[in-house]
Length: 269
Length: 298
Image (cartoon, rainbow over all chains, first blue to last red; front, side, top):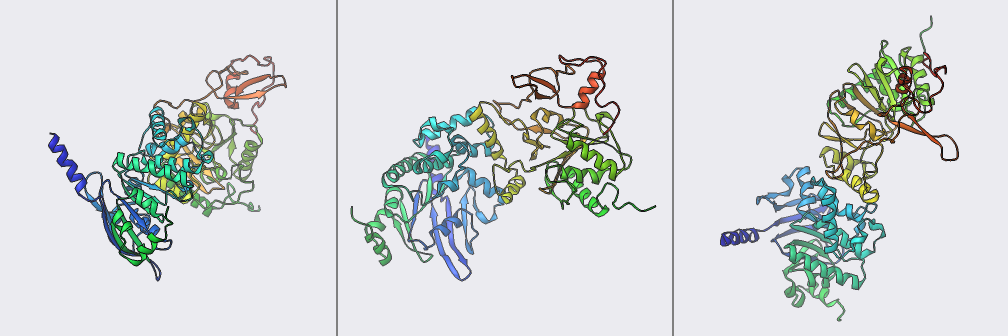
């Protein structure tokens, strides 16, 4: 029985969750993203690094189905185990996927949160969207999640307007994780936070990712974030992936001149 | 004889056809907001231009019209709309709910049960129930299309988190025919149960917002709620001071500056009917009092 379960887990973890095949996107004559292919496995954290304008954010939007690619396709292994091309999903299915099995953490928490409604309702919204209809249970789950992201439960009825930047970002993470997604997209989650708050957030993220066995695609220009969180790194320049590999390998022993430049531009501690 | 300068019931026939098509579509898709080319009416927005256009489109010469405003037949809004149709359509008007075939209403549903030969026309200021939750109209339309109504519960959740109970007292959201979430116009939530399985046709017109929606007769209308905080109609805990009614919706009237107040039925026709039938309240006048609206109809 136990062995069978382990086998099931092996299969579950052995097949890629998200597959990108020669993804391209051009805006008129400008190619924002060219021929990007990779596979992401359950529990794996992939960092996409590069300077601004390198196509990181476009790639993230293509992967999360918010933009239609000009060429190539993205497939995702749904909860029922069947891998499907995202472009064949109907809008209703895609939106359902987006608010159940996926998460999306914006750089600016105001984009990912409802700033005027309480923290509890922010966390509970996804639950209500999938049909939870019991106030007490929604509230209990919300307080549980606030505790997990280190927000004082006494603030549950306060609107995120009254929260600090770091708290807002943690609330946004709780809001995304409440439906236990398997894949989370993050767009510069630590951008605009001061260094000590960044450190705390990264620590929290690292624990949650391990605990929940999350697959994460994280876009960042901060190599320190990539080093702390990710297993693998993709370096982008001019819309192309120029180097990819294990995080320590790429960051400690960069092959491409551009990556070497990126790595060497970090001030030594 | 000179031909009258305007058409029967004010609107021209082409406009009426357009509105009727919107009404038919609204009836076919209960609770769905149908866009229509709302016209300028000889009254300001907010005075019931949507309801007036719907009434004008469905009114026939044989109809008997009743107009109420917050349950009352004798407020400015009700009187002016009633006069408007008496003049432009020459239809009979009444204040008695039972006798009317078309009832245009602002913010109330009459207390007397409606029957199959009646149409209730609501004046609607804001047809979109998700308006103050999701500012993008393109997004709310998509949410209706995909029946994504989690956000509506966010509002109810906020009520409970803030006040300990669902404090929304009017414009309480309902789900029509197990599909569309609909704003019942700013009627008190006391009236919500009357919309469910109602024998009369209910039409909603929003003039400024250019939307018409409908609840066909005998359609299921459910007020949204939580399992552990079920929907409850609200009513002041007092009998009507004039007719003693225990089950009607009450208005609170402040009578002096020392905290004095009285509660009276908001539905004036219902209250007068009960008084005429011999019911009394604590503040009823002497029996020789003249009836306020004896036989006149505005």
